[in-house]
Image 1 (cartoon, rainbow, N blue to C red):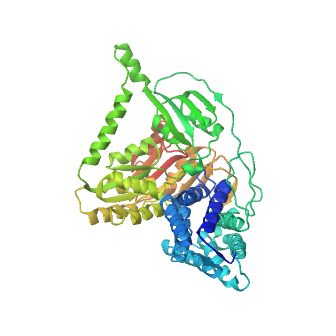
Image 2: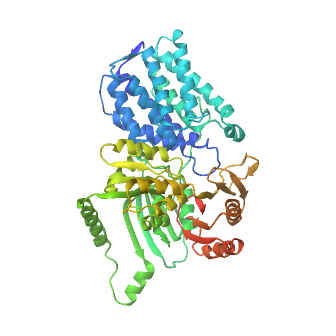
Image 3: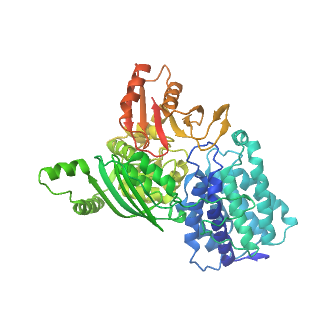
Length: 572
């Protein structure tokens, strides 16, 4: 092909998205830190899937229309830094194709250079050895090689070849990659995208691999593996009190924003946080019964994998009391109806002057943010980064003239910023760049609806530097990082700058080591937020130890219910 039109470009983009879908788990495994939140592949996959939906049913003949629609879909679906940067690359490509019905090989190559320029401009402090390096080096090599390339197929082959070379070079530019022995995950994802486009140009359009037992092959990941589903299992335990939580979940797919369902892991989570567990799977339907003290944590976790068909939650202690006194059970349907009426009434109210939106994961954390006056919660965090569109919806839900966003994760700041750009001209939205939950909580404390906008914004931003944060989670593989040996299934204590404090078999030992590393002579307040895997009763033991070890500190130990991270720690 000497040139391509919109219909051909559409096939290139769809093939790229399908190829990424087939290989995002391998990209996730390239996470530098061996923690269970490696989600670069998932983020890029969901971003590309959003773009695919925009062009799937379009029949535009021009490359301008197809590239613009694809770019718009990526923009709204962008998740995590990798997803946002990918969306910016294709935004630049769309700019390069503006005004064209068809593009020849040179115009095609120059569009990728424009993609590089837009992506670099979007990142405040570009880091080499990342996806940025891969797009920069491969697009430059493509333009340089045009004397030897005369077809679109040849251009994409050259682009892919140079991208793979650049990817292998990333550990030389980013020392942490070389130390851990991996290439950059975002760069790998971009290579997979280019591979899908190249295959389509050669007449080998990549279809989505919906057969979980069939391996997908790639020149980037020559040995792809696939997880198998387990069968249904019933686990019995004593009844106990708490909340009887029952739900039916229809499993989703990655293009729905859902994680792959692995029954053994799901069952393990239920067993760890509840009693009287009954779990049955029937194709894409999962039926669950569990008694738990934190039903919200169960529902938040389950919703990562699908959407609820039914939910029934009963307070067994309260119902037991009601029955003993001859009262009737809770009117759940009435509560739901009243909730809907309240939401509608809120929409009809005049706009507030200012509002807060925060990213949170876990019932306890949600409650903490709401206590501090947060108007809308965006579900997500380490294990599932929210998209630009998720933020746009929350900004509108906040129902205010000015809305401040607390992303509470370094990998979410860019998506939040992109949402602010989308809302320009409709609602004034600003990002307070909180990179941890503890920063977000402290920042939210500074918000006052009666203060002026600039004063609120500066106060919240200023509060971020007063917090030192850290976290405890388990390692998913053996490795060595900065002189610390990491053992699979042991607990890692990490500062928010990703410095590894220790890796130990006992999560409490890891917690205490982290606290010691964060506390100094200027510290006055210590906050420990316990995750979904920590029994609430353990809080007293933790508090007693820390009060004795650090008697001069004000101490706050609370249950956050967050998944994956056993403890979040903040020191002010």
